[in-house]
Image (cartoon, rainbow, N blue to C red; front, side, top):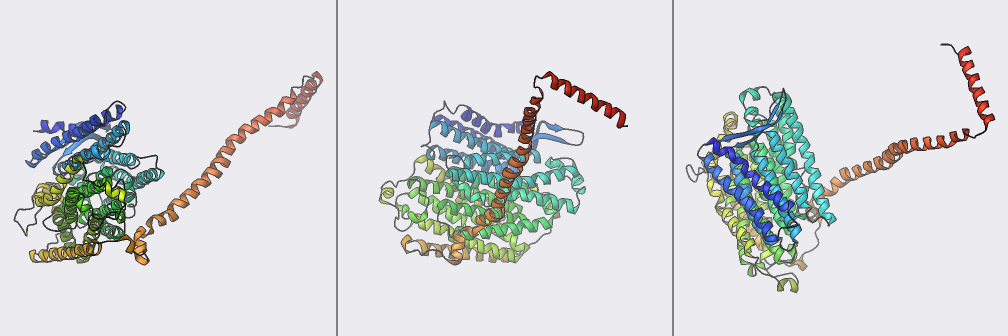
Length: 637
């Protein structure tokens, strides 16, 4: 069986091969060929991932070692893949949702010319390859290779339409903010290596290695890793790049926000779960930052009018819930929410793309409305996604969000109460979005209304598949209070979290209490949902007064970007200008150029000594002899 698992290198290799073919031969491939090759590569990875998943489900985990990347006296870094319950679950999410996004892109990007079309798909394949490398790596170094790879690909894809300066600025912003987090990850990794001397998961998490770490070591390492996770998974204060990532094509938004890049931080902490369980101070930080991010992002989403911006802040908010789960020790719940979120958020982004496609590029919800009668499939699938993210039973979001909130209540009822407020806001802004887009009367131009139509099958097919998953995807995690043994996902992931479960302080809540807090959360979210529908079902843009007070603050996203610009960007630009104009041009350049000018000037003056007059030469010779006599006679050693 291990020989079979040894060929798991094919899973990331197929997207890498797709990247090379579509990238190197982009000038020769037709659109159909590029789309087919790229999609087939991801489907092949999905098929292999499914095969490996069933092997692991039967109890066959494996570390596939291929060769050593680095081998010195004190450190060996092997190139290895770890195939266990956590990695195979993420493999299915990445390749499954990634394949649907590739299929969707074949239609959505059809207006691009053949060369750019192939380039786009080569970037998508490289993105998936990097993410697969991240989750399959058997040690932190291989994870970091994938970590950096998705950062690079996000830059390429966000700035895909690079002729627009705003889009390239958004790409640079994502790249730079991720580098800040990556520095934290690297420092934590160096700290870990300096004490343990290994990077392989099985060795790092062994009892002998953990015994070498003091409380200070574990807290410091986990906090630095968390800084890395904040950058990649868009948590306060490194979250502002994610909404700006909407500059990329809509399928890219779905790929970044649903199935791949933003879940990297969640995966890293879930993989390092025993370290975080041993660092309760870090867990508290993770929970507080996660919950704060969830609430702040939800408040911003309430007042956004760009359909993709609402979904972007929704992603930031949902990622905050995942970190809340990690912080309270509900690791299974956090991973569960990664899975369900991949289904309904990919569905919502692709649904938004279908709407934008029909509206001729329009993204402002105030100019939409009444699309229900023109786009029945998009409408129905989008509605199912909205219900799922709002946490309504028995949709997928209900089960995963309830598990996180139950874990929060067990840790602190205050955390649960704030989390419920966030869930209410989620239901409100999602049904505000749905009502403004699909209900009421059409508010766009006559030309837009004339061209309204349902999207082609290559777009609606992924929507239907994702809508089904958004409905039934949570049924693998039915709580014990509803069905004994119904939480199949918890049983499947249990070996990954065995060490944490053995040392964690248990905070149990009774079934009656769990029913009560679950009921309160659902009822309040339902009321919030209905309130949003009531207000915005017959929305009329002309009746809306300009935002004032707190509404204006939320509309401007708490002015966080402006604050960052004032206290970070502008001072750095001023410092850079000082170094450029003073240190570089007048200092370094002045020294270098001044040396050249001095030599040039000196040469011009000395050349007058070569006058060609013999008398002058004799005079200089006599003066030189006199100087030698004076030195010899009067200047003694």
